[in-house]
Length: 329
Image 1 (cartoon, helix red, strand yellow):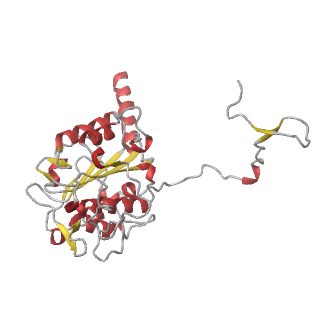
Image 2 (cartoon, helix red, strand yellow):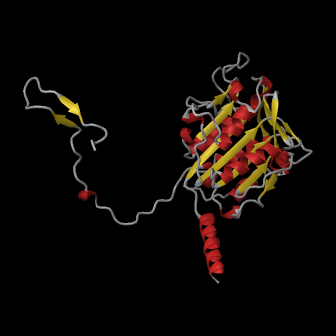
Image 3 (cartoon, one colour):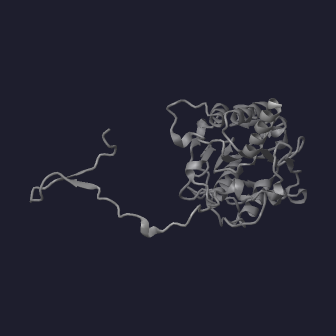
């Protein structure tokens, strides 16, 4: 009888933990390709970067991995810019892009180490994914891929099994609360087939055997400048605001086959919540409901103490010194 009682307490504790809401948001945004003809992949990832930053996720909670060779490429007719539309009304490179991993730092090893937290001790905080069990993480990948793999800079590749194992490590180490995995590449859905960890919602731009297609060319640049899936995702996100009532179910329908041409892949079996009840800002924003436990009377606060202390009586040679940061024990 005592064993059953303890078991009931254990199960109820797990249930309460599973129902806990997230406490912070992070985004890992990765362009795995390079070279001028892959301009659209940089535009893809910077478009998502611009959207999540506009919706409140700070740069300190965004890990951006790109080749960073488009804005200053000698073939770029508009130096220091990256556009995702031929009308050039949005410069997604902007003036405040903070790239965390650039060029040859964008490797499979660095990506897996970033997710699992197995980085060298000397790694700067700006290059670390400092998440915890209350973190909702948006993972966005774009580049060239195939059935069960995603290429990194045409020199190596990460497999769907490696990615699935990395996410399991994250779950075991309590590095996330929920994950929204989003990928724009050919045969993209193959990259989430090996996922087996809980609380992951996944969306892909194409099914196995399908290509993920580009949207349009900018004649001035001479290359495709954005992919179809990301183009329509960005179009949707431009209408999302901090108080938006739109849900993840709305976002999952963002690119029907008549406009994407490829078939969008969705996986919800690992995700414990119904997407139609999940606000889109749970992954693309960083807002928090605030509840005051009791009224606060600001008149009760005392005036702040002076930061300076006098060493001796005031005279023309009087000197001042700052109070010590730590009191003497």
